[in-house]
Image (tube, rainbow over all chains, first blue to last red; front, side, top):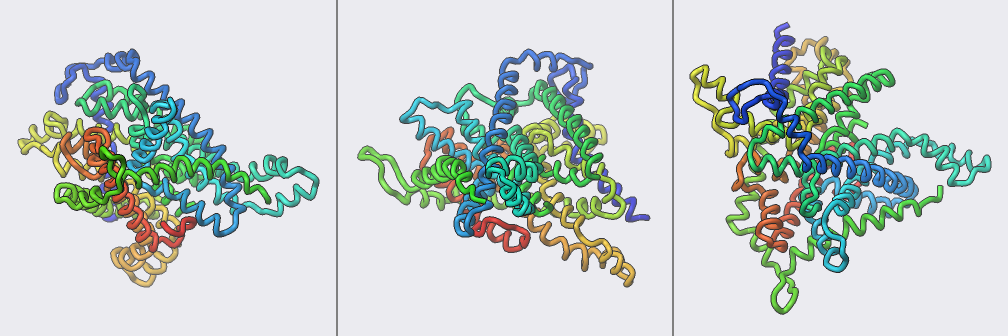
Length: 287
Length: 274
């Protein structure tokens, strides 16, 4: 009994630690005064200012556009690559898999810096400057390995004979892949896509190094704002982002708990975090 | 299934965007541009041993180790509680634990800037209680706090998932044989969760050692960890050669520690080297 109560208290203390900063941000986003510690009345002016902010609008656009494009392209290249890797000889497979793990395990900052070196190098003899396009290329690059690593386990579960049966029944290899193999590994593809999307939305470090002047995503924008000091507009932005995420999560959770009781929460956990090596490793331990 | 060519676009992509950048990094680390052109040099690597820079490495590793230890101390009980009989069927608690992770990493760190400020709500409360104010913003403590806050879930989740897969009847058997809670914890739960602990340690230590956001926002503008040093060399000092050398060294440190940790991780598959 005593342990039960102390367990509960401990858990609530941890939740307090986790949620206190977020709650404070939400409260202050409605505070009239710009300075902290003083509550000078309820206001929505920070939200109004937020919506009238051109820079935030373009940062939001860049974030979403890059996340959508990079995750779609990474899913296509990554799924094709996984199909190819699955059929490779052991030696070639080992080499490719080690290379695939490299950007996953490499610190973000090293990936970011090395891509920056490449883009600057390319810029020296073409007119492709650093900006939206280079940021997109960087995001595709760090997303592909996650798609591959999500699809491969599904391929291993796949029964090759089904594919052979399709061929025996007269289908072309391409038809067999699109009608037999792809539907079988679809859950892995979807997981990979979602993982890529969330990683892209959340990325700061790699974007920071691979973008050019004037082009920023939300993370970069928040960083530059936070560096200049506390700004109530960020509070408003945080509140909106947190509410969006919360609503999305509740919807997803409701849908998945209908389908497969509970298990999918853990998948959500994995795709959730922004720091990559960890979530993948955690993910693959549990998968 | 003969569709090996499917992998070619990926291979081309990898060569351009993964292999080539790393080769460029290596090239920059070992060369210097003088009036006569580009020359091979070991100067940048030697500079890493300069006490100014070497102490940055030591401090980063030190702070990351402290944060990892705190995460383990705080996080292990959380994982055990979440995986225990009372809570394991109740997914809401686990969900509540991960929701903050869904918020943008920078916003979470920024939130702590607000909480640790001079006029922060914490200090207002402390003031009302006539206690001395908490003044840790822009110190080591704030950086460690930021790391613990951001990376705690990375410690809890792997341990939690290992504990959830554990056969619960083993615990019941131990209890039937007369083991009290602490004996069960020490003899059964902890030894069986070692793989989770190992990946938790890796997952906290790696980002902690390479971060430059937490140290910049919570440690102040002049605070230096390896990440800040790299950023500064590339974006402020403009010394790309030395910046590359530091990045290269950081990459080596990370890959070596990864491969050490993976010795403990039996389920890991794929890469044989890392």
